[in-house]
Amino acid sequence: DLKIGKWANPSGEYRIGLKRAYTFFPPGLVSRVKEERKKAFTEQQAALLNKLYEQKKAASATEEQDKIQLLITQAEAMMNSYNDSGPIYDCVVFHDGKVWRAVIDIT
Image (cartoon, rainbow, N blue to C red; front, side, top):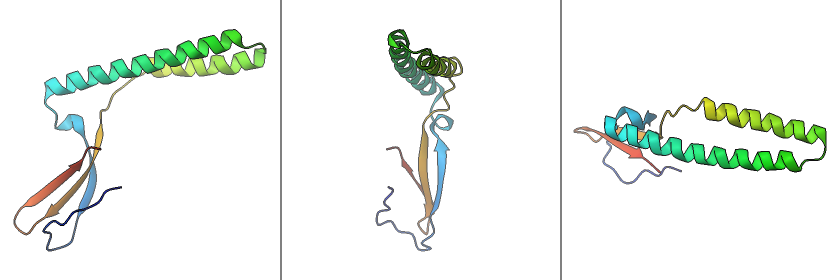
């Protein structure tokens, strides 16, 4: 929920859009953020896979095991095809009568 404060905007026109953070982050920061995000993703996926393996082992019905195996296959495919496009931020741009102003919501 984006709330616009009391900014000088004579026209009352606001332009709203999205911006990928990696396009304006310095290269060193992009590398570090990608590394941190991949580590977090890998840890979450590994925990999920471990849970699924245990559920499959405990499942008695073949049909239930097949359903769990399908989930395992999908989770493994997600891990193998991981691609981090980075955070995407909401942006508001407006002209205050003198210059263009940009506001980026990173919440």
